[in-house]
Amino acid sequence: MNFESTAAIASWVIKAGLAGAAEPDLLRGFCERLVAAGLPVCRAIVIADTLHPVHEGRVFRWFRDRPEDIEVREYGRTNQGGDTAESWRRSPLFHMLQTNQSAMRRRIDAESAAEFPFFAELLEAGQTDYLALIDRFDAEAAIGEMDCIYSSWSSHVPAGFGDADIAALKFLAPALSLAIKSASLARIAETLVETYLGRDAGRRVLNGGIERGVADRIEAVVWFSDLRGYTEVSDTAPPGDIIPLLNDYAEMVISSVHEAGGDVLKLIGDGTLAIFTAEDSGQACRAALHAEALMRSRIQALNERRAAAGAPITTAYLALNVGEVFYGNVGSKERLDFTVVGPAVNETSRIAAMCRSIERDILLSSAFAAAAPPADRARLVSVGRYALRGVGRAQELFTLDPETR
Image 1 (tube, one colour):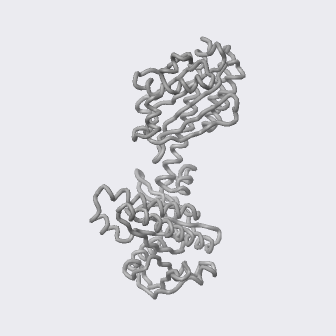
Image 2 (cartoon, one colour):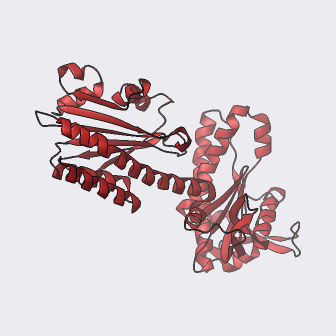
Image 3 (spheres, helix red, strand yellow):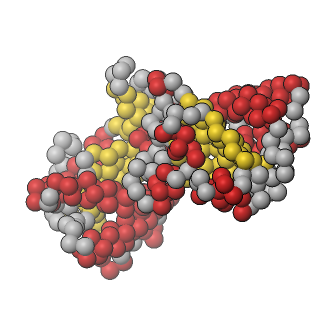
């Protein structure tokens, strides 16, 4: 590769990174330009750790014989044992970390194949040369486990990489790593805000909706659910069982809300606050009832699994209401919460509390009953008129007819 080709590739990857190109597109475009410039790369792998509640990082693989098909794989925790951890500990990249190397170059032959299992795979695939690079970040720039970008490059031609090829890869890899880091950080930001704020609220925050006191007035179905008997369960269960219990039931609730098109805004201990919005309130009511049906089915299956394992079980009670709410940023200059507030939210919380006293697993407000589509309204039965604590007027509450559930 000559200087002009190297400079052109560096310029391209910088511009692509600034334009917000995704990791697969960055790797594909980078490798295609290497090949066009005459560098005999046959396979390329880029690895970036991340900050994610489940995955430790992502692997991107490019192959010269199928350049459009970038393989993307997410991997789990490498510090928790299993096949992923074992494969990592036996890799050349792990060896480089342990020995504080930034570059490793090996000719792929029978001798090197005995050094690492990955080299044996390369030899079997007809690869002849290998270069691995680690571009490290300063400690202050690390995000969770993401403190560097790994890359490896292999060739299939008999002569392997030339000295100029190795020099070009070492020169260009940091630019690619910086672009990959930029794309990964954008993904991390999206993951974090959606995980901790909710999907819709997270998108609004990333789009600039962070001004204190600014809120939209919207019509929404408000969902508030709690676990039945959670205090008793938490008082009697071993301490180590509490978090798994909360996680198990939260997964059932949250996945049901999301599948039905709702947005979870807040987890309050064992409680879940969510909203459903639609152009027509009836559609939002139907979506909330669909989420309730999904939740019941999933909790039933979960309880069967937990009971078989000897773990404590519970169920959820739910309140649904319809009303106008303020949806936006509430809090101080130092700490904001993106949530919903307003009388409809307070009413929903009070209705949820009534589930315990009148022994119902779901209660619906009169506003919800009035807004529900006729087919759903026909499934509702009145449980009487009740005064709600902190709410100025008594109202009729409804539940679902057991025969229609």
